[in-house]
Length: 118
View 1 (cartoon, rainbow, N blue to C red):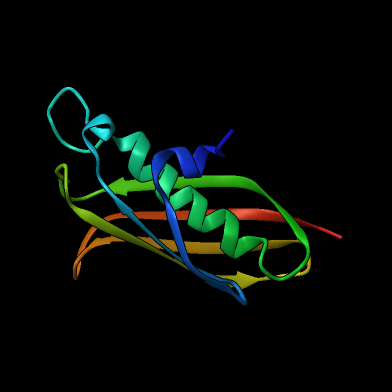
View 2: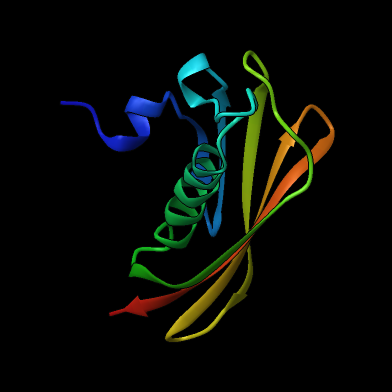
């Protein structure tokens, strides 16, 4: 059985040293009642990038907080990329910023903090 991320069609392009880069194509089943990409789909894309980036340094990391802002509507067929970058790395916590873009256009912004377990 495919993972949740695989079932959404999320493609991992790279993961290394506190960063992750993913791509996804918005499919008709990802749309909301307005005919644009569901916020949950955009959140899932960003959250997967966050999870991969925060766990890329070897320590197990689990989410403490997450926040998402949605700026632009996204349509079926649009290609999205999520890039997660480490903003702060401490001994027990780390914070990440994930930009979700369509081409060069920022469509959503996710920030999250994790607890790092040894």
